[in-house]
Length: 257
Image (cartoon, one colour):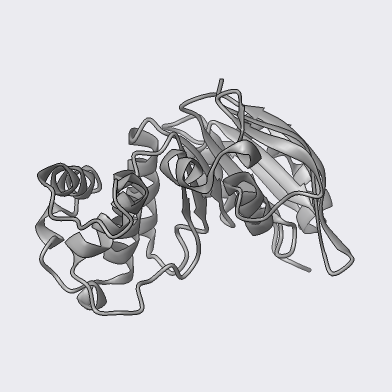
């Protein structure tokens, strides 16, 4: 089971954004979605989530075609954390996390006063190390704290699949490492669009490399993050070293001459 992408293509205003993307990702794996700006990473996440409809091909989760799921069922199974997904109104941290419970409400105008919803929300906050922030105003948090709370909101949906679009943007090094480590520990199938190849090498089980909407490489970090593939996709020279502690690839870039 897991995620299966079969020939996904997507076009906007006559421009082909995705071109026959196919891959299989096992349950519980963490996949890094890499590629330069404009490669189609964000679009692929939205197509997998069922928000954008593919022109051709299918995305399946645990053997079920995502496009065939009612919107409510898809929202229960799949959590999408997009860039700049900040609330526009004044909310506490707990209220932000409780937004993740919307797909599970039994009534159209149901409230979040139920103890079960609150327990799920508090558990999600504890899981990301933000349990002490529950009563804080969202807008008083640092960037790293806000990202942790957004991860908790996604977890509160209790999804089978978590999709994250540039979750480490604007975070310092410590916050980046902490957040990606927490994603790994969740045990949920996750696909993350990332720009930092070294972070992807350290925290991902699998890499999908996009370029111009095409899937140009797929496999373990050591198989995809090679000087040849990185040079062809990003147009840079680099060397690959072995991390002295983790053993994963470390990319060292050559300065432009």
